[in-house]
Amino acid sequence: MIVAERKPLEQIEAMAGDFEKILVVGCGTCVAVCMAGGEKEVELLAAQLRMKAKLDGRERVVDEITITRQCDTEYLDQLEKHIDRYDAVISAACGAGVQFLAGRFDDKIVLPALNTLFIGVAEGAGVWTQRCIACEDCILDQTGGICPMTICAKNLLNGPCGGTDHGKCEVDADNDCAWTLIYKKLEKLGRLDSMREIQPPKDFSVMAKPGKYTHAAFEAAQDEEEQSDG
Amino acid sequence: MASAFRSAFSEKDFVVTAEIGPPKGTDIAQMIHHIDLIKDKVDALNVTDNQSSVMRIGSLAVCRLILDRGGEPILQLTCRDRNRLALQSELLSAAVLGVNNVLCLTGDYVSVGDHPQARPVFDLDSVQLLQTVGLLNDGTDLSGAELQGATNFFPGAVVTPEADPIEPQMIKFEKKIAAGAKFIQTQAIYDLENFKRFMEKAGRDGVKIMAGIVLLVSAGMARYMNKNVPGIFVPEELIDEMSTASKDDRIETGIRIAGRMIRQLREEKMCDGVHIMAIGKEERVPDILDAAA
Image (cartoon, rainbow over all chains, first blue to last red; front, side):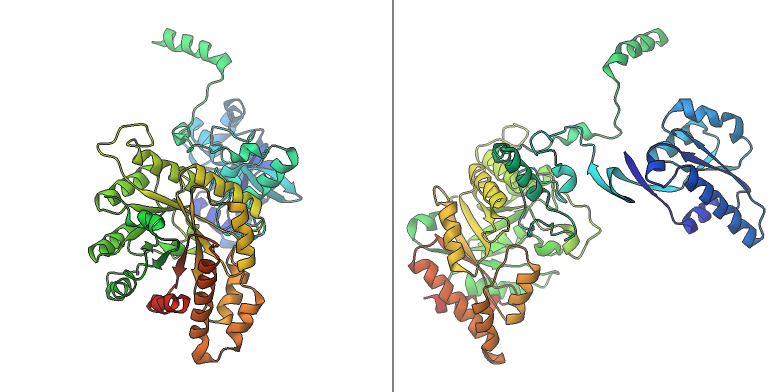
């Protein structure tokens, strides 16, 4: 899932500035799980913004609403009937959600409440770790299910650098050396041969931004639609 | 033009290189003094590439300065600061400037240096960089395009004999040789028994191995490296030897230790040569060589 953290209140407050009517929109999927932008978090953020205005003696209405996902038009449509009442919208979604909301309601000022961190997993209570950089060419079959593009600070593909130190990384001694992990895993699986093969340079052309993907099942329909439009 | 450093391995049993670290800034008087002092006493001089991720004069410019003064340079090239276009371009530039030896390294991460906010590159890794040098030598580039004139590099790589765990390091070492490394300069070694065991594992088929010698200047430095530098192990006896030396005699003791190690490596034919890194004490490289005689 996408992992995010909420921006400091001062930063959100500075963005909110003099807007008198603000809608805080939560997102009920990834960022709700990582406790950054779900129902509870937007309730808290809205209360903090109201409180701040009150303490400053300013007029400010702050309402909140949480939709299932901000990365889907179907759910964004639910905001249609509310949004005109507000001067600004604060989106507590990941960067993708903020942009989709801003695009859907393109005459509104939409402000981000979160910093998007990474694609990751829930490592333990309250701890998430990055596991994928979306490189568009997965090689986890060759590395024992451990991603060197993500876990290795230098995204090395052919083994550890000289900075590996008792299984830890020179960049941060709290981090595991990806290649020590990969070696141990492949040894356990009896698949060390895949580490002995020289991996060619990564093809970064597939990572050209912005990414776009059409599911094969929809490609034909889309083509037809484009043709009839044309 | 062929590499004189490459020829040295067929002309003698024990080849010696030393390291030059370019300064930050344009005043090169001291570096030139060091180059002049050492160049005729060794077979080649390595020039570091923004060593420890600290921004300095580039390796290639200093390599050319060494050639101008009659020395034999080894271009150190890391994957940290350049993508595959820049790496290949740098190699072609080196070739036309007469620099024919290249040491291919991953490079330290940017966070250890003086511009920690910089974007690290690592488009290629050291194994892929070695393969790239091989392609350029064969007259094509990484995209498969034919070059208007090939290079003639003598490519080298590094290994850390004291890496823990050693197995993944050895797999990478073998890949570097398969990717075309013809010479290897090791991370600093201090325990010759450990080094012997490493050499048994490493083998010497088709590759020349030079042991890394870093001059000890104090017991504190040895302890610091043991604690903080991955892959360096200074045995307790050497730390004791350094700590019992009087303040005035510390560097001399370090020089004696380095000389003694080099002599033993040479006399017991443990490897094909040594690479001396005097880090900040380049002035004393001739004394280390005298102590090793």
